[in-house]
Image (cartoon, rainbow, N blue to C red; front, side, top):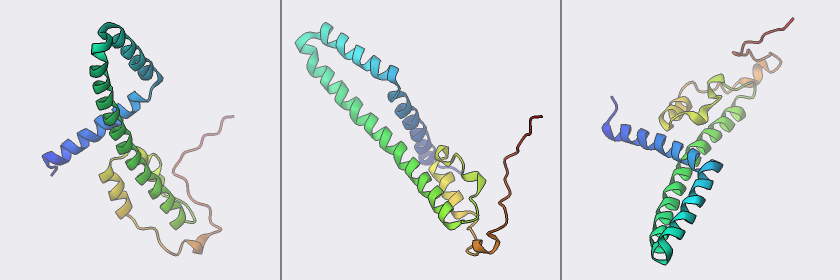
Amino acid sequence: MTTFTHKLYLFGCKVSDRGANLSGHPAAIALVAIFCAVWFVEGGPKGVNTLTLILSVLAITLTQMVLNQQRRSEAALHMKIDELILAKRGARDELAGIERKTEDEIEKLRRHDEVPRDCDADVDQPRPSAVATTVVA
């Protein structure tokens, strides 16, 4: 059962991800520059303080969105590295694309299916792949 606060947290994560991705797009940066130029021309000296306030709040909000996204991405990257170190013979296929998972999904993967410590026993054996290969004739 998911609580309201957990649902709210997940919604915040989605909004944060989308906001960070959109704000980094070159078109968004161009739009902000155009908006600022128009505001400055239309508002004159009186509008500068309001524009500064708006841009300051926007910068702080976007910084928090990017930091939230980086924190989760870093957690996923560390998990991938841990998996490669612990599993000399091969990594679990479900870890591919883990940076798009939620924090809870990452933690479930971390706790699930501990990698055996005797990985060196079958070093010469090839790792079975879950990826299908096709041969073009």
